[in-house]
Image (cartoon, rainbow, N blue to C red; front, side, top):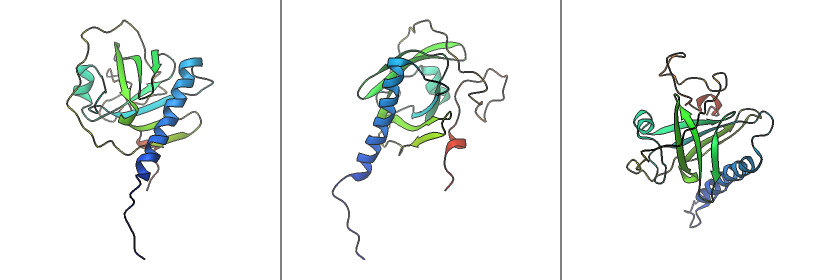
Length: 170
């Protein structure tokens, strides 16, 4: 059997369609808040073009970070190509911007739903971050966001977790 290379970028189309699911979900949450017990772990590449993160987070997570949208977050704004939200990391308020193309994972553990995306190919230098951040206080509860393996609980860890426990084993 002879296999020919497709001239149609099917994989790119599928990835874009899956990322649009995340956009639709976030748009729904933007309009009406998180329903029931739903909450999200959203993983993305930190150096993808258009990602805006505070310098300290970029230094701590130079490749990938996972944020938690659960009980307390502010200023969720959903756009056609990106979303932005305010949360705090270790008591430090931060406003972040994430293009959907930077996403590598989306999980809603309340209903055991998850999506994985092909890592984006475009890597960029760190984006400029604003010097001033609006004062908001956001933290996900400790029981919803286990600490990364590199930080022990109680040592001022962040709300960043890995999605490994939600990934399907190959």
